[in-house]
Length: 264
Length: 144
Image (cartoon, each protein chain N blue to C red):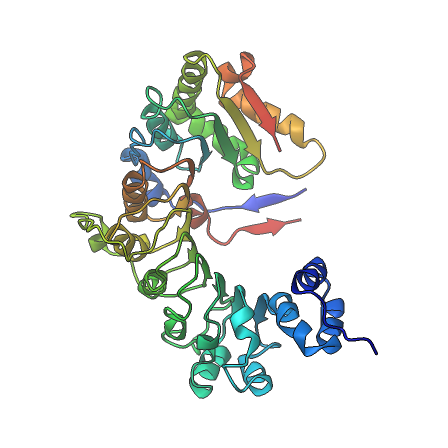
């Protein structure tokens, strides 16, 4: 058999051309060890964990974090469940191996009493390169989400869809907004902010106090409670000098419609 | 025949109608496009927000008024609230003024989520009902 080694540039072009063909990429891995790194870059670029593709299985297949292909992953999608949270404790922090992730999506489709109290804690700051964060929960205290947001220093785009299970009270008004302190180590927040959530205060207040200020260029804000609207207003005004696109709505109508039923 | 059974919490509704939220966009001078989504609470807050953009915002090129299927499914409710509050009249007048005050007319689009094949016609009817002056002057585009 001929030596499968090719010029690096040529090999890269061939493998990159196959980036969306998983079967072909797997075959490339079998050609030569020299083909493996470039191939893994595409094979493991996007990883989705859920009940079927479980972190425990990942840990069993790649027990050594130093040789794990996790560091090729740029997009990590976690369909969260208590199983995955427990797995993180058992596996000694499997998530830390994914240290080059740029785009993170975390969601939980259910509101369960068995959901861990702090499901996002294992994810805090696990990758310093994250630029885009998408969090979708049914009912999670918004303070936990804001902690996650602020743990990524290069974050540009933020999407939060959540129904905060903490009751809203009169203290949720944005009186006495925090003063911005300039700093070079804060998230950049130069992309888009999409907030569809109740308990806006617990997301907005930490954002408004972030060192370096907010420079979002695109907003999608949907409020339900009147006090949420005031925080929406505060966010929009704080970014007004950079804002290019605004999608704003009062979602209250949905809150007012109770138990819609369709009759034949 | 399908119909929706809806219950409206009038206490909260009144809270919004009595004291609309005021969004000041006067400093957002880089704003290029806006999507505004009316709700059953009226469109007073949209008019208020737009009023703060009229004078300075030369970059503003597109205003999309997006009407959700809640509204299109409850046309009578929309019309009644529009008539009662006069808020749509104010918005219609403001958008006409907005378009006529510029050499390059910004694009105003009304979009609605609808069911059925007659979607475009229904959007047109909706536009004529809610924003009659703007529609009559041909200053509005329809989108589905």
